[in-house]
Amino acid sequence: MIPINLLPHREERRREQRRRFGIMAFATLAVGAVIVGVVHQYFANQIEYQVGRNQYLENEIATLDRQIEEIKKLKEQTQALLERKKVVESLQSNRSETVRLLDQLVRQIPDGVFLKSVKQTGTRVNVTGYATSNARVSTLMRNFEASPWLEAPSLIEIKAVTVDKQMQNEFNLNVNLTREKAEEAPTGQAAGKPPAKG
Image 1 (tube, rainbow, N blue to C red):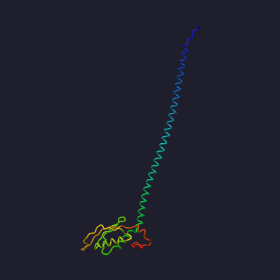
Image 2 (tube, rainbow, N blue to C red; image 1 turned 90 degrees about the horizontal axis):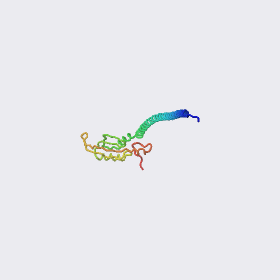
Image 3 (cartoon, rainbow, N blue to C red; image 1 turned 120 degrees about the horizontal axis):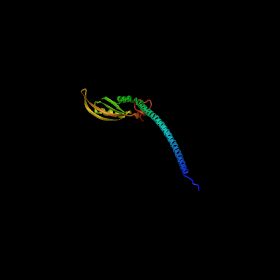
Image 4 (tube, rainbow, N blue to C red; image 1 turned 180 degrees about the vertical axis):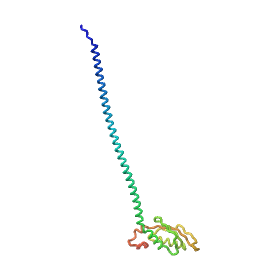
């Protein structure tokens, strides 16, 4: 019987297995490193792309904010111009109002009545003055009521006072301007003359 020694063969086989295991482990590590590198690069590219998009959006938002500010300023300027236009139109439409008011005061004041002050606030006119009697004040109010440019006279106060050593009745009353009637007046109608009735 021939003796066979298997120990070196087994040892050689173990060394071969260890070598193969080392190669497989190294290959696995290399593949894992490549996969990690590829994934890292992918996510780095995605992050860089998203940062670029965010920067683009921030720039666009800043541009839109500037445009919104400009639009807001333009709206404010437009509103200011509209307000000015409204004031000019109001002055244009009522420019003859003062003339009509003074004309009516001259036409409607009866004898024995003297005006001290006339103050207009919108369509309301405050009139103060002196009259020789209460009847003169009543006549003045009736004349205002009959005027096509004045309406709704209301007496605020009347009291007896001494002016230049003479007894007078000091009065304070309000009367309204009638702009609507003025607009309805026919063309060529004089400011102080009422429209023809009937």
